[in-house]
Structure formats: C-alpha cells, structure tokens
Image (cartoon, rainbow, N blue to C red; front, side, top):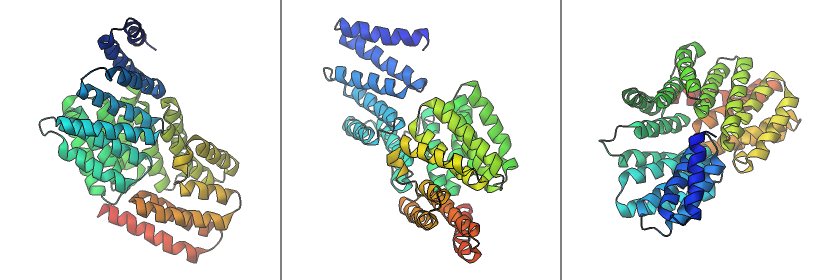
Length: 374
C-alpha cells in the first residue's frame, strides 16, 4: 500500500474516532476507491460499507446511492452476487427518485456485469440496453467507453457479433479521444475478439499493442482478457498447446487481481486445454480447484463438470452434462457457450470412434459460427 493510500485509511480512522462524521465519510470513501484500484476488493467493500453506515446520519442521498453502487461493484468481484444485487437495487431506487440518469445507467451497467459473471446473457443485455439509453448524449467520456466495451463483450457471447463490433469500435474512438490508456487497451482487445477472421495472426497486432498498454499500467483485468482472447484464437486454429499456455497466463493474471470469478473461469478453460492435450491428471486437479473457488457459478459450468467426468472415465455422464450445457447456454442466450459445448460433444464422439455421432453437434456449431458472422 502506498503512503497516500495509508494516509487516507488512517485519516478515516482518525476522524471517525474524533466524531467528525463529514470528514470520516470523505476519507473512508477515498480509502475504498484506493483499495479497489489495487484489486483489494474485500477491503474496498469494507470501506464502502462503513461509509454507508456513516451516511445514515446524512441527508446526502446522491452520495449514499453512489457508494452503494460502488459497493455492488466490489461485491460482484468477490462473487457475493446476492449482496451485490441488493446494493444495486437500493442505489437504482435512489437514483430514479433523484432523476439522475447517469447514476441509473451506471447501476444498470453493474447489474448487467453481475449477470455476465454468471454468463446469463439473456438477463444482462436488457440492462446494457437500459444503460446506453439512459446515458447522457453530451457525456462521451471514459465511463461511456467502459460501458460500450462491457456491452460489446456481452453481445459477443450471443449471436450479435456485428453489434459487438460496432460497440467495440465506438469505444475505441472514445478512448482515443479522451486519451485513456486503460480503456484503449480494452477496446483493442474487444475489436480483436469481434473480428470475423479467426486466424490468430489477424488479431495479434491488436492484442500485442493491448498487452503492452496494459502492462504499462498493471491492468490485471485487461491482461487476463488479452490472454483469454489470444487463447481462443489459438484454440480455434487448432494450436492447443499455445491455447493452454495463454489460458495459464490468464489464470495467473486473474489470481493476482484477486477476483474469484475471473480466476475460476480461467481455471475452467485451462481444464479444457488439459483435456485436449491428454494432461488428464493436471486437468482433474484444475477442475476440482475451480469448483472449490466458485461453486455457485460452477453449477452452470456444465462443460467443466463434463470434462471432469470424461477424464474420470464416466463417459455417459460426461455426454449428458455436455448436452445439458447446450440447453443451458440456449436458455441464457450465451451462444458462445452453446458453441463450446457442441464442440465438446463432437470431440467426445470422435475420441470414442463414433464419427456419426460427432457430425450433428459439429454441424450445429458451424451454423452458429456462421450466424454470428452474418
């Protein structure tokens, strides 16, 4: 923790002890912001919760709503989703009463991000739509770029690849105009992710530039996303060793960021790489680690449990889980997940010398890919 960050936390405690509520609120919020900036999400949530306790004695409804929204953001990163949703809903009511459309937009973005953390795209997209609709036209700023990037990523999971590309490109233009390096790196990644040309060399110049920018500011979330997208490109080109190497780097970045959901997801995709490369002992250990980290989310990760069942020799159960994953992905509107489960079903059939059973899921996966590019 830097000296200035220690000062903020110390000042918050000092003014709290001396019953100077106004200054205690100010420095408690500042300490929360600083904790969030260094990925200390539990500490940030604690500071914001304390600030809200102090604000019960204040009539500053707008500030309390803003703190609740920030608390929701930190709780999402800690995978405390029910608590996060409660904080967001309380903030949204307050912003609606105040007529603050920017505040409402930011809360809708947070709720959407919560649903994306569960890959419930059907629930996430309406909140992104509401956020973009409510966003003031005159505020083409860094917050708008961040919102566009989150919306691009969510639409990329569904069939609307063209809308994902549009949002990513708009965000890139805003990020360049405001000169925000972190947002520029994120925009480069989402433009690369939405490219219809899946060959790794097509996206690599964008990803290389994004990685350099992210490293320069120690943006761990952004580095995590760089490695995941690069891993997907490698996997789709058939280079499973490179895909696993990139997914391992994604996991390392997620670990350093302290975000449970990102780390659990990175482990899940690493397990898939271990399966394809025949590293089954490592794959089994990886899956058990992911389930232990985020059991709520892992219940929906049918492919993760299917991969574990397959590597443990429970082939019929593995197929059933993969089929359930296809149905779950369709229900949640996560067609990228549907595509992935269909590929796994085809792979399972090929590994057991059943090419006739591999053809239907493979053809459906190809159809989804074509629809996404149409």
